[in-house]
Length: 442
Image (cartoon, rainbow, N blue to C red; front, side):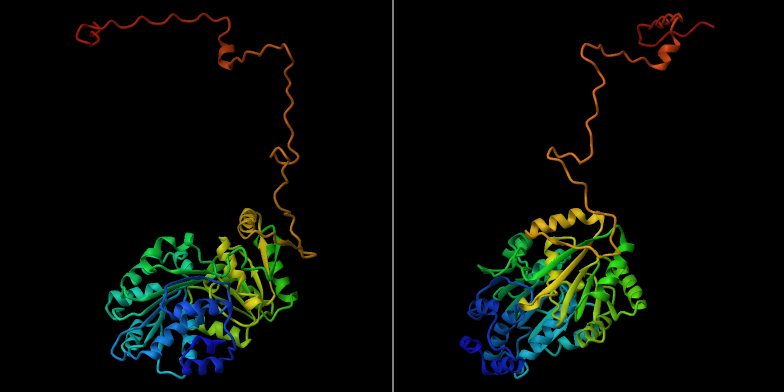
């Protein structure tokens, strides 16, 4: 129970108001060492309650020890604006009965407006690495008084190419701080090159791996010949599967827009989300999904991490994820908190090997499925014989008989010279002692 953690009564009041009765596994495991001030490296499944596990220690410290003249006390870095907004909202709910304030600082918003809000000195800032770095460089933000640093979905930030920005920000933080790294697929391999610069003697808590993350989610694959057939299969699935809300993932922004337009003409309640949209547009689309005014979201991997939207029963990979970890995060949008979910991947011929590598990485075998009437002719690669050669290939017969001498090959130009007398080679030109050929007499 939360009351066993000796949390401040104002935080307990907020926890009760939110309807949280007992800590989840990751909260029960991570909160005690976090409240003691230890650095942590935590891996736990999607939807397990990691956000509370790092917010409560920060809020507990801010409530217990007042520091009105200090600057930012807690910094939480996230890979996407959506996740930053979500963390900020949860922080505000937990701090509802305190005077602790939080601010989201992300790209896509007016810089001067953000700087004005930062001057009001919020205790906790949640933001994306690029915009935080920009504020540090322009001296509208400093972390000289920082007490807590959290990297949420740390491996994703590095995958997205934010390594330089993350290290710039962490190096600008006060050295005497508590640091915590959280993710659903956090590994030393994924973040090993920054651990020594961020954490000090961390305690590792690994409650899940990529291989155990999706045990309660049913995964299927449907083969397709090309993108045109995929579109027909996607339309059928969205019209016939049973779901409250669905997310469709693509690898390209232009494709997301195209599918959004086509599905809307089919009478489906669809919205689109990708990195080129402004922050107000992205927030509006997510609110439409949460409110049920649309029930299908077409998106890129910008929605693969951290988004917690109730009622997502179906995930469709129109394009297969580029890695096993990213597949885990996409599929993890359904089946939240141990509930059952369904994930379907549409596989074109050029994606077969990628599918096989993801299956090997996750140590699972996806269920094969066909849609009657819209099956493709592609059935996977040709099966291999035991000798490793493709089935149906034959060894060429050896036409040579024992004792036969190899025939001498003759070139066509040699045949033309048969019977003709070869010209004698010209005598070499005599060379003088000085190394030059003598001039010919006229």
